[in-house]
Structure formats: C-alpha cells, structure tokens
Length: 277
Image (cartoon, rainbow, N blue to C red; front, side):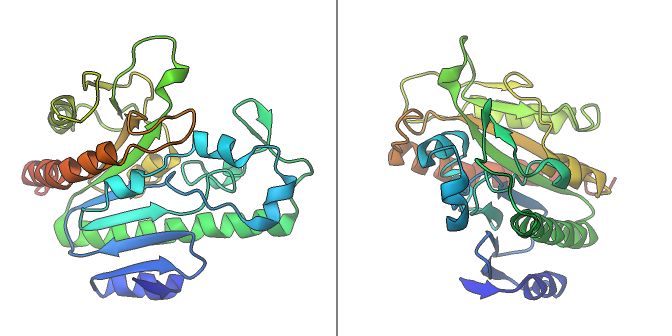
C-alpha cells in the first residue's frame, strides 16, 4: 500500500492506473486492482478519532464504536475496487452532507463538552471534501470507461435495539429509480436472502425495512452520475456482540468470502443489463 496525496490519487485514477493507497492524512484508503464497472464502499468503517478531540467528547470510545460499522471494510476487501473510511463518523460523517456532517448531538446525547473550534471543523470538512473528490473522479472515470456502474454501499446496524424481528440484510432503495432497477434490486435481495452464514438465526433480506437508503453517499453519486446505481446494503451486527464489541471472525470471514463471489456475479448481471442504456 502506498501513502499518496489527494492529487496523486486523482491523477492515478485519471491515468487508469491500478494501485492501493491510503490518503496521506490516513482518513481513507482506496484500492483499484482492476478497472471494473463496480465499486464497494464502507464509509462508516472507521474508528480513528483525533486525539485532540478526546477530552472534549462526552461519548466514550465504546459508545462511538457501538454506532460505527466495524469490519465492513474487511467484508468488501476481496473486491477489485474499494473505498474504506478510517476516521470515525463522530468526527465527521461521510454519509451526511457537509453542512450536517459534524454532529452536535449523537443518538440523543450531546457530543461536545465545548463547541468545536472553526479550525477543527474546517479540518474535518476538508477530509469530507477530499473523500468526495476521489468518489467523483472514480465515478466519472468508470462511467467514461463502461457507460454504467454500480456501487455497493456497505453498512451495519445494531439489531438488538429493535423491539421486533429484523432482517440480517436490508437494502435501502427509496432514493433510486426503483422502476428502472427493479430487476437488479430483486436479484441482490435474492442473493443476500439465500446466503449461508455460520450463525444461529435464519438469514433474511428485506427492502426498505429498517433503513430506506437516505444517506449522502448514495445521494451524491446518484445526483452526479449518468447511469449509476447505488445499493445501500445493511448487515445486522450478527458478526459481533454489538453490546461488548467482540468480533466473531468466522462470521466476518464468511461474509467476506461470499461477497467476493456474489458481488462480482451480481455486478456483471447489472452491467449486461444496463451498460447500453
């Protein structure tokens, strides 16, 4: 893996180079093993929280981890193009628009003991902007090369906080063209619904059940693309003890292995169906 500046990452994409790099401030990493018409992203994967914010934050490290999406980056790591965030959403949330990306409160609790300085806010928002400059460059390049692309927007959620039965997987589609992409959405649901994982409960996948897919990452790509679908995909935290944070590596590895095969197969179906539109 290389450590590159924002400009160097953008230039490598524009030159259609393959590379694996972390941005020089370590806020996110990008891997391009091959230029293919699909991308996997884990924008809430990160846990790093700048040291100069620790004493000013009411939320403990455990509370922050509880609301993050640990190991979603690992789940998609076997795919050829990945975007994985390393900073915590508690510093800035990549799935929110810039004007709301820095929390004042988080899950009903005030986040900061004292208001953040302009310098710290500007630093966080610059990281947010850097990420989306790379997203846009990659999106434009892939649409130029292939005509149509699909992004898999991977998240996780705390299923035990729900007082009803909830699915292992949820696909949020409220912000995408459901008529145009109905077949490919249904195919993705069927794939996830039939996945065999080393867990005690039955694997199910629903659409717009626990989440509807209203995140900024999806909206940004959709509004800046010509023919790209984003599938906001949630996995319940069946791969860990969501209360203590203990990870179940056999479940994470199983998801990673299955995604490596199924995302590739599903993306090719998408491309065959939509690249000439």
